[in-house]
Amino acid sequence: MKMHKEKYEDLMLRFAKELHEVGITENMIKIVKDQLDRAPNAASVGTDETTDRFSYRHGGYLIEATRCVEIVVKKVL
Image 1 (cartoon, rainbow, N blue to C red):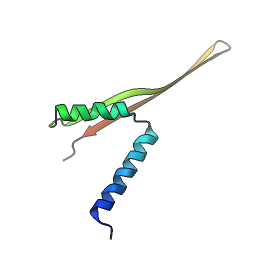
Image 2: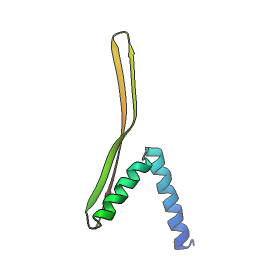
Image 3: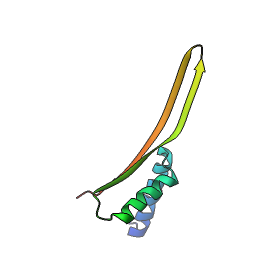
Image 4: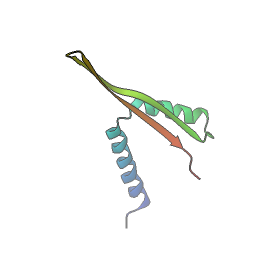
């Protein structure tokens, strides 16, 4: 049986990898951390950011794509 510390480290590594795959930026993490530091009893904090933007013009058409990433931290009872 794994110790609690090892399980915690495994979960934190998995969580960090998932955040990276989604596209969470360091700036977004800092904003959420600051919000929690400023109001530790808040029920929910979050932020969103446009991380990627693409546009292409050809033959009278314009193709645009945008990736918006949102992170929300909520207290669950």
